[in-house]
Image (cartoon, rainbow, N blue to C red):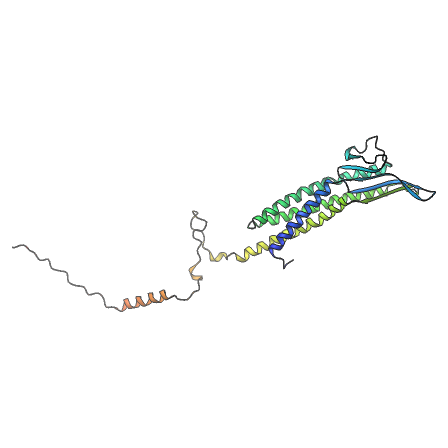
Length: 275
């Protein structure tokens, strides 16, 4: 990364930030975080009969098999009496995953803020601090999202481990593409954050490289201008003698060799009076 130019870091951080924002936005708004199937195992031919199948997101639960096939309900209403969920453990899974919902929402807000600040910093690169601030927001957004993902996974695993074991009960679950989008967004946002912070250090180093040393400036003499009194010290100028300097020295020497000017006596006042 040390060989990357500022232009390449600017482009990569923008692309990574935009992709991270897009993926987490899709993940939060879709209903394919989790697939679950429940049924029974037929002992005669060892086949499985699916009684209920659903896919769930952060806001809705949609059934695609069973008595409620084709129905989608909001998460806070999925325990309506007319909806027949097969086991209590499935209900508990859908309840506990709600604890992870605030973290993706916070992550979405943070990555949007980081993306806006990052673009302002790219438009006005002289404001170096904006790259650093956007990088911090990208990293915080990724951390918030990964906390939500960990809570989501742990909630499901706890309920699955507490399910009663039985040879006749069939249960299967898997994570959907919305969950994969959220996990990919975490990687992209962390990458954008690291590149934004590195871009800040690179721009700051370039500014320090081209900034004159403070010893070359005199203190300001007045407050009327931002540049008043900030002139270079003449003693630090290293230059040869110009032809004008040489000619000035010659003229001074010639002037010193001339005799002093002749003083003429003062003219006597001649009276024109007849007396």
